[in-house]
Length: 421
Image 1: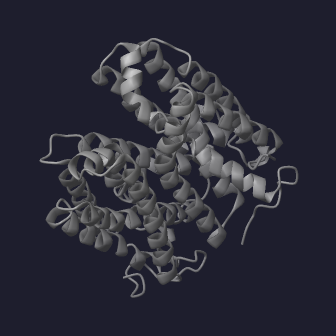
Image 2: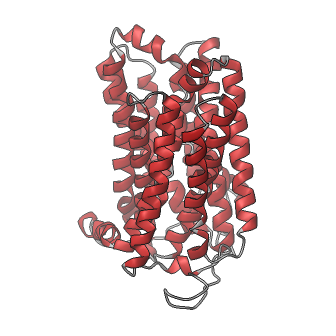
Image 3: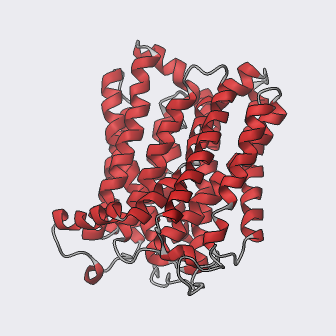
């Protein structure tokens, strides 16, 4: 059952489009200019080590912004902060495309990440405010697809812009997208009325965030759900080296394989959701380490021999990555009442922080990059399994784990109930 009935000006379809646009700010800000990295490094007269600070600085700044922004939008509502940070994003993004100094570029990228983090946090909070039950899960699934589609399509769009004009247009284009989102946000009806906001100061509001992080069950589950982002973000960092250098496929073929991997991962997510529809979440959670184990074995045994086998192994891992995020968000949102912005902040902070670790680990001096991806898949699977064992052995619990995948259908039994086990 949906709660979304108050967007009379913007409309239901446009409101959903706004949510999806805001959720795409991460990939359009980080991945669109990747094809021009060597050119930008040369133009700035620097080296890759210095320039990479702009990438890691962006990711870290965005993760922190996501964590802090939840209490802010719980105190001041969604619309006002969203408009302010969209304006900040537009200005800093345009300036990124105008500067000629690498250190100014790094500083602007760190500031740009604040606006990007705010957009992503508001996107998830709008879903929490406006939808519930099965419809909320569907919207989160759409957001998950955008989260995977964005990093794959953004470099392709960026390459087209670079070939037609220059790398600077890869910053002007996101500024235009942010401008469109800002117009739509102006037309949006506030989803958190004043009567439902926290009336305390920000120092008091952050108590909700601290209590959320202090909730062992919630915090451990948030970490577990983000673990499968390790191999996904690592893959985005090194997949071109694996396909083009290790397996010697062409750039065009590489683009085709990226698209095929996305398509197969999306199909896998749909199939998993269909097969587990109505399954109690405490039982469904066991599917993810099983999928990860299959992918890890394939990658570490045969995935490094041929591109077809590498693609097969990673696609299986990607099915787990794509499925677990919207499912996990639904579980955590169903398990916590109030502090909607804080919930969104913690979830996204975990995903981006752990994803950043995956990017770093994938570039370590492994025997080959495919082996490194195998290590990340194996690590994510083993850590997830170990943490789940601790979660259950220590009696941790979450309300959302006792509902079915349709949500809103609790088993009505304690932790040790036969259905959930």
